[in-house]
Length: 347
View 1 (tube, rainbow, N blue to C red):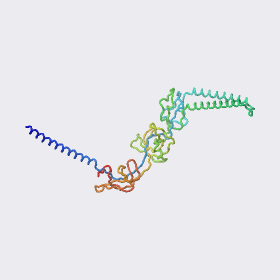
View 2 (tube, one colour):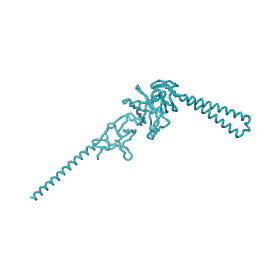
View 3 (cartoon, rainbow, N blue to C red):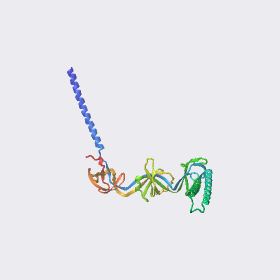
View 4 (cartoon, rainbow, N blue to C red):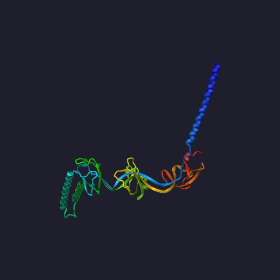
């Protein structure tokens, strides 16, 4: 009986081994089929299209002229003569601080100047006729009085300037496009409270160009603007001004403002509309092109793989204008030919 049991167990073991082998063959077969599917050749036709090499930057719409106005010193607001959306004329007064103390400071400065002038006149009388034998003490006294008069005169100028700057003046004809909420009579305003005046008879797009791209921007250069407010439109323009001072970014980099005059295509624009601009560095019309990733470098030359009669044929090509995604082919290919993605080729 024990012998029969042993034989049964032995037969079952053999069946298990056979089943395992069959399963392994099935798995290997599935894996081979999957690998062949993943390595199927990926192809692309050689086509003609317009090609452009560009650099990008972000920015916003501004008026033809635009000024951000604020008081040079904090103070109590006496009156505000404009509201957002108002049209204003050049030299028009927009808002003013309380000037009671500023006027008092000016009067005090003028009184101090008169006193300094009187003191200096008295000293001049004392040394009159002693030009050739003025003592060191007399010279020291006279010089001190002259310096005191100069300081008193400068104090008057400073007081007059403070009084003048207590009124915000429109620098040109324009529209009030923004005014801080704190601009309310009786409120204490700071340097961060502003009134923005813009000449909206024309608009421009001001982009912040990264310093690494600054040297590629030229006056008159073509540009294409995309605004978030008009996702289906592209506005053509030209570079009209390149800033002369960089602006530090939060990340520690530097950007340079670049202004672009553009055709609004009849669309209603507004100051502050944001968007992006593509500065065109070079462009070709009707260029013969292939995707960048279809080009392979071999021994310093550019090659592609052409599909001919079901087989791949290596071709050396001469390339021209290159963008982030496309390469111009100057020699070695013809329109309509089928090329193979190198990474998809199996030997």
